[in-house]
Image (tube, rainbow, N blue to C red; front, side, top):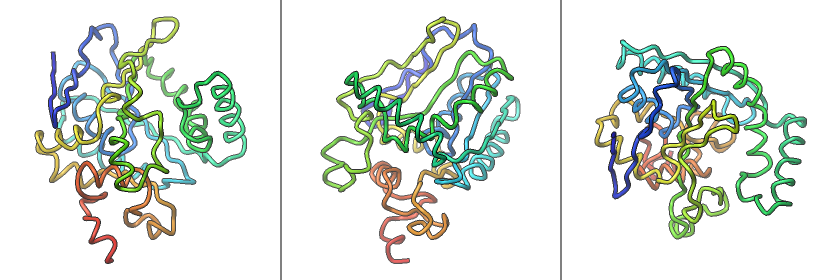
Amino acid sequence: MVKLVANDQTVDFFDFDHSMHDNLFISFSAGTDSSLLLYLACTHLSDKRIVCHTGTDTSKDPFVGEYATDIIIWMRKQFPHLEIAHEQYVFNSMDLKWIEIARKEVEEAESKGEGWRFPTVFGHAKAVAAREPKREIRKRYNITMSTHGITRNPPVEVQKEMGFTHVAEPRRNAEHHYDILNPSKSGKNLHVKPFVNIDKRWIAGMYEQLGLMDELFPMTASCIGDNEDSKFYTEPCGKCFWCYEKKWAFGCYDGGIKPDVRRSA
């Protein structure tokens, strides 16, 4: 059993029989969560072929593919004995066809009282647009086990105190507890969310414990601020949820930039 403890939170990392799965499909965004997930997978699941996939949404984060590539190169140097594949695809979540599908799915969930399970329509459109590319990659690599680094929100009182309740997804609040293992209806495929019931302060604690703050952390990118607020994606905006969350957990924004430094620039 791999028990990982940080900031009074515990993760039992892949504490189940996964011997029937040869490959691990990692949703890789170049953020702190997915980067740590990849690092831990390389450390503790070295018997798997790791396949990372990165989707670049040209309407929101046009450079995420570049950030992800840099981190993958770094990971391959740290774990030269492992096979780490990296598949990328591009989409535009603001395309009306994706928004319309997302709107219908969110409305259907709301009619069943399950609307809280979704982000906004526009947020869900990103997942909708990425479905087919991910399906093709899964088929190509014969994927049966996938994983995602989603974490719980900071406590609601922190959201209120820091003033970012309006950009937080309610579905990630602590009032909701999720299953870490999510098998498909057929039982052949498994989706694992090892961090879903812990928050980003656990992530920050693990970066400290594993000595990842000097090299890996500065390479991660979380901000999804718009062109104007991020000065054409050259610095963290300090306004999006991911900037608020990173500030709360790590005390800084992307690149280790301190909040007061960004504001005075």
